[in-house]
Image (cartoon, rainbow, N blue to C red):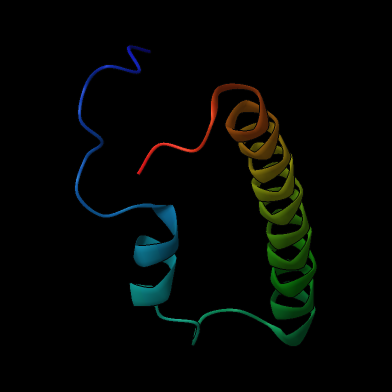
Length: 65
């Protein structure tokens, strides 16, 4: 995948928010919650890693504003 290309409008989270939850059983909803919580943790870890990388770069090269 080419990282230089613009991202498509919308994303997976936006698509999930539009999906009807009516067909899901309680067990399926619990599983979905577990999966989403794991994805949130993964995203937060990536965000924190990116912030730390940025802080190192800012300290090394000076913050550009």
